[in-house]
Length: 533
Image 1: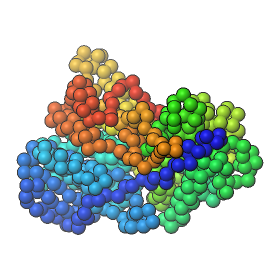
Image 2: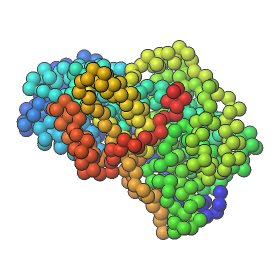
Image 3: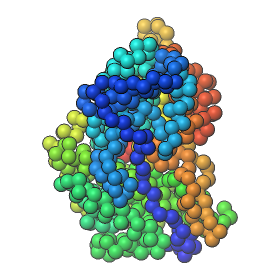
Image 4: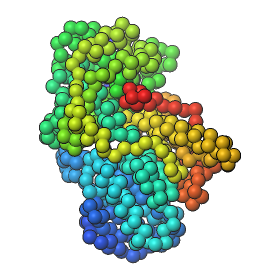
């Protein structure tokens, strides 16, 4: 690595970790709803499976209620990372940090909100959908003036929302799977498995990446992963491989900068090369300088993988352990994965970051010869029996995903859009054959986009990572205006039985800010789908 590039990377801040904590006050579960009447009537209780719930209904309730499904929460305690207990706090809507602005907005417009904390944390889609079905019935019983129910949720909650819309369209009038997890848990965890295996193979053979024997085992492995990522931060600066690097790697690939190996691991796993603070296009100083170009092309992508990888590592390790526990054994398998094919479309684009074609070929050759992971067939079958969605759109549906989300990649929402395109084409062909009215589109994809340039540097020309994450990056990183805009569109769709007009949607999205609706924009599918097309 060039000295000028090393100096620019030296100021990179501490690795960020994803936070999924919910800041609503816990509500005790009750056998039957207990309501406190006021300007906003609040009812609390528990479903038959023990999931605590909360319902909030304004005095000017207009008949439309929003049921919210929250995302993945850890099912183990991790005090060192800020998770001292397992939370099952009921959540009736999106919360930005501790800010309940979006919930207040909905209530002010006359909409009711409700949601549960679910009976089990972790990967709980099967139980979560069952809870939502029961909760919708309970809400309608408690508030019989309900005319429409809108389902929405984020991440794993977006996954549940899509499953609910496919299995029980009679219960809801519109849906919004936001930053939606991919269609199967296998697709979701393949990215984590590939990334962890790559880290293990290139940098630290002590990392397990799966086949965990207990929650404690997975926490120990998580410590290894985070320690390695910290070491890689230093390695990117110095150009020296981490001390844990296997001897054969140093012998065969030691002349290649470790940043190139890290970038390759990120690319083969499908992790975005834009992150909270690294845009992949900006360097320090003058845009015409070599320092600017070398950082933008060689340093920024690797640093983005490092930052995104740190965000995804906690969830990747613990969700893998969680699903393994449910399935009874190892679920990740890369015995047939062709990592060279995985990066075929990116190796030229990121040639500078990968240190050229020869270095890329050398690293891929090492990966090809490295020991692979075999899954337990019985465990894989059990995993595949868990809830999934097929990509069928039964009610007016809106997706919204950041283009550089490192946990639920934008390509997951694109897969859903592709599936609906097939469904819509078939419906149009049937209408043409029967000479009936052409159907209206029932799905719109909204993308949270990154600014053109957002990497910042201090006076010395080193990256400044102290600012807030850029729009379109990190996990489910939406503003109150974006949530509220989607909610307005959903409410109109629920009332009308169809999505608003394209012009209405475009106007609303423009006013939301940081978002686009563009049929020509197609993010790459997650690598799992490319392997299984």
